[in-house]
Image 1 (cartoon, rainbow, N blue to C red):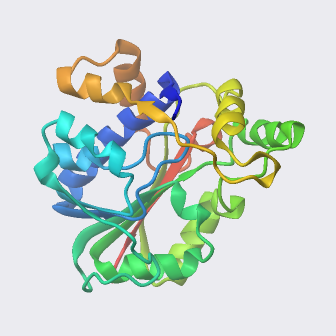
Image 2 (image 1 turned 135 degrees about the vertical axis):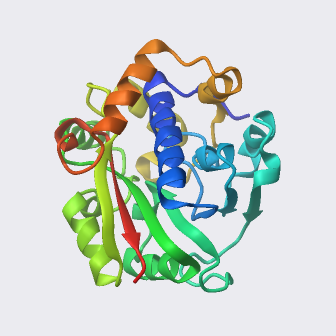
Length: 267
């Protein structure tokens, strides 16, 4: 039986920042149709990263979702805003060219074996923009994270670290024929990422220690869903979110941000 895991406050803040970012992008860029590819989770519940787009009226397509998490869309009353496509080859989809205003991914694209070909497919199926949100290795939590893996003997399962640098991702966009339209640092709460104990517990229980396959998946409890339903977010979250969004563009916040983003625009 899967173990019950509650997403910690740091993950909840990640999700809150995404809600703000997606609302801003939808308004500023005129986004109406979005595809998230792939849409599984990264040490958190998958297939819920795009709810910010759904909440502001976008039509969302999730590629290779986690079916058990689709109940979150129903809980928020936006199940009519989302469709799913499973068993999709992310390098060669069956979507028509220019099918979506924006193609995007949260963190998990660095797990792919061929990011360059993946980005070309994202470009093909998007009519306007490609957005990648990526873990930021230019912050003090990264070397601590690598040390924890070394100390406990956990295989590295967090993707290709060379793509966790904003300059490398911007270069990849340009090589793919995408103009770097906007980039910035988000999720800047003031503490390093990750804190440690949670990461160790998740690897021990659900990871690939000693190169064994994943034994089970967590049964996730996602607190952000409750906040969205009531509209009552903690005061600290609102304050941090204002700071995060106000200074998101550029690299000003990069040294302490958990994530960065790059938006590419088709010519």
